Length: 345
Ligand SMILES: [Zn+2]
Image 1 (tube, rainbow, N blue to C red):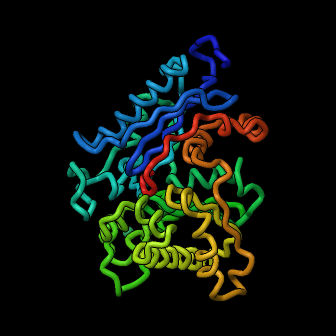
Image 2 (image 1 turned 120 degrees about the vertical axis):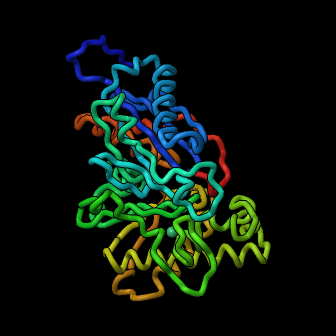
């Protein structure tokens, strides 16, 4: 590990990364050679709406402590967070229906928050705070280090607790007016379904296919449901094939809109079941308008389960670090993630 003598005018040789999901939060500290320590906890959902931000700071302090790094010396944090975001006095707040009980429509959260002041809390501790939607951060990391290098028009998709997209067209990452480009998991697919998303929509992509919503509809955990479908349970197979068809149709809609040539698909459901679901998705995607969809490819993340952590760090990274990481691929040396229930992020 490179240790740097502390000095007030010296640029910090460390940076912090945060991956904030609806289920889990991960904090990482890194130096120019790669991640040094990583700690995770279930995302805080009780107390005041500052709780997730304060939990993030506590986890980052713990990661720094584990790595022998002085937390007060770290100036920058990159944050890969579930969205959507709103800006309040120019600071990003999270308004995620999977975290904020005051806006979630499913009544299963132990709080009444309508927003989480994430940037405000982090700015009390860091000089530079860079927050991106988690799929945009993952997309940036896959373009820098993974399976989307040199692909000008591409997307990162997660199939997990929720459904999200990060979008890149002609080499430009799309962000939108509040950093919410890519929330295509909430695009409406049908009026014929009673499946309800946490956002309140009936029949949007996330309502129809996300791990959380499948569990609420069918009272079967995503892990059990997808494993049973793979093993030939007829009822589970019907449910999973239908969900996969909707997922493939969502990829078709995004392809027709943005002329995408490659999707990297992450998230725990795809991580565990992409091998047998991929032909179904490709069939749905490519069975319409071949002029737009022929040759579109799918891939898993090159950064495997650490795409969100590396994405967060990449957001805060000095310009001269990525070249070394591209060579040494430090994510390959990170301790493996404990097995999780597919559908939990
Ligand atoms: Zn929705």
